[in-house]
Image (cartoon, rainbow, N blue to C red):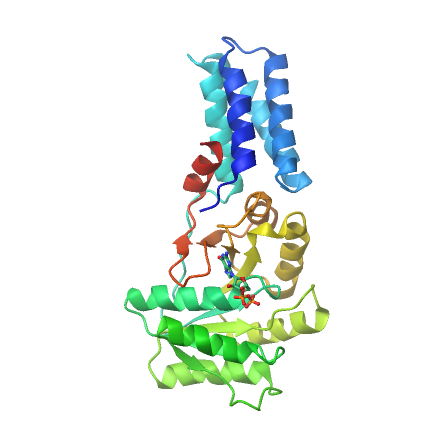
Length: 300
Ligand code: GDP
């Protein structure tokens, strides 16, 4: 998964300096908090998140739990770890399935965020777990998108419901509705709806996605976001939250040169959990997201 190389190195260095101290003075704590703040900002973590995080760490580090600790520096590291887990969403959150199948999972996100690839990864993983997913191609915006999903479905060995070639100007909301109906008739227990990506946040396409949401009443709406997006992560995530009220986040391209900011900002700012981490172009490169493991990776 992500290396978070620089952030990790900077924090390690900060903690190494801290460990050379015995009892911690308020100045030691402030110095450490300042270093953490700088490291997080350089890793593209949103300012609001950084402020909230460092305020909490500072308050706890100056409090009794550190004063009383046998090893105060170690206690501060532990506090940072706990607060990192908290901003990454706390507990791991699994995919929610419908009581009465099919479970409907809708995907949304910017173009190029990794939606189609994730659709294939998820279908493949669900098949391995004994499910019979159906991919539904509702990205009728880009001429090649349906085709691309067909290729991914084939690689994943999953069924697909798509408009006929040449009918690409069809109505995506109707295709979504028909896709769910098709799943019901053909005993697919899960429907994965791929929606149109957009280059920037686009009101018309957001409305289309919202209409698909209303028409299909999904059990999960997953917002796929490229981990390398940096400072734009927060605004993009907020726009999608307003537009489609997603229930969970998929962090894609975590294998890349991500500085980690998106991962640390999105769950915190939207209050929605990160459910999956996508870590490569291959269809097997998908992991459940564990906030505690991610925090350990950052602090390793
Ligand atoms: P979409 O426009 O949101 O459907 O995005 P795609 O699924 O087409 O992905 C855009 C590009 O990113 C493609 O070249 C994918 O191969 C690549 N990609 C998708 N997910 C990952 C990932 O987790 N890691 C890496 N390295 N590349 C990815």
